Image (cartoon, rainbow, N blue to C red; front, side, top):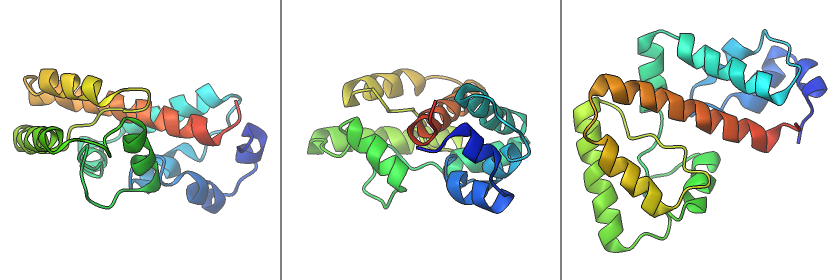
Length: 164
């Protein structure tokens, strides 16, 4: 775990190396948060999320598209692998895997980005239930929800690295 005082003493290069993958394959989020000095972990999480929420729609969309499908068998980042494993998405039955794959495909077709759900602390059944509910939302609603979920993911990832 790294302390807030150590974070505040980092160079931009050190900060980006440490936190560049907090937002899935989107170094620009960490780069945007660098200029801040943090007093607390909560303040740091809020800063990262403000960078995401204040970005252009094109950057936000690129961030959403950088996230993997849930329950995919593709190569994931270490964070995504651990998060999905913790939710049991690495132990799906063939029927469950087929259901996730079909929902992933339908969702991406409808929205132009993958279904995003902060899986930490959730079960595969809770994730699937949310998926089945959210598949009926409008693209605009899902865009907002997906960004909120990205912020939850950022929070979980920072909490795992930064001493509170």
